[in-house]
Length: 408
Image 1 (cartoon, helix red, strand yellow):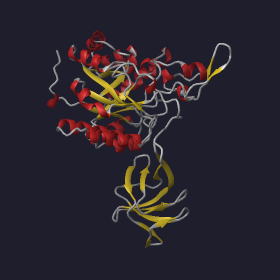
Image 2: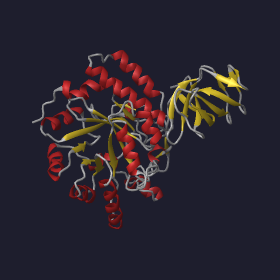
Image 3: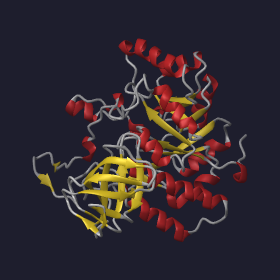
Image 4: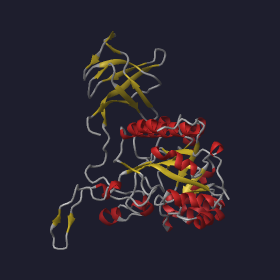
């Protein structure tokens, strides 16, 4: 059976993206990206890529040297089958490397059309026999259940030759493998069809049988912390998995940039014998600066206890805020500068900024400002300014300033 040679078997780093901007944000760090169409995705709001644009988007992925994985991982109902066949025809005409699916209707139709299949974590694959079952159908990779421990993953790896993928970072769900019905029950929006309203992130009260409200610490009683395994790269690599997966197709491009960079650097450091505790602390600090709900190690080292929940804070606990500043009104490539209308806030030398658009993602420091063609240290809201930029930007791209709070 499989015996990993770590020198030759570093995991593929797979990032979730929703559009060209998030692809731009991770293209220098990821090995592969997974993404959705406007149909059959558990992230229905990640609908920037359509059937009409699929081929162009995949070509862009490939031009950056990355592999392209398309998620088709919702429940499939009888009325969905004709549309599913249309999507699979689109996949066949594109350069998509694999689809990520779990519903047998999708899996079997894809294999019949010679489309490579990765089995989604929605299938809750938790043992070697199930891995080999999907392998016998023709699947090349299985994304394992997020409820497995590291030792269980190691055991599965030692007893199968099918490729294995595990989640290393991102949101955790209250339900096993994301099979949650709470949103559908409360709001008629099915999480299994991509429309989850995330009621587990709401504030809740604990009420006794007699109607009394039980006093507990915090009110976000169902909100799980995000998974973060940056401090455990050696154990994960040594377990012999083939791919590390990062959740976050709905998060912003700065999140995608930061997480892909940190995990890529961690993998490189381990490969080169330079992975240290000091570096993991720095990477974790960087990760805490983008959207997160606090961090835990999920189920990797046993069932999570209270430290796996985030009852005190609503949603994002990052200590960095994105403050809207203005929009790009023109770009001057010969001089590496842009005109910016400061519609919403000020800007000054030394500010850390983001410039984002449909196809743009740029992080940089403000090193040069011009106001009325005169160098300036600060420009105020309402001004039109010149800004030195580190790369190509486009008209109507948005400019944000990063502000750090004392609390993390």
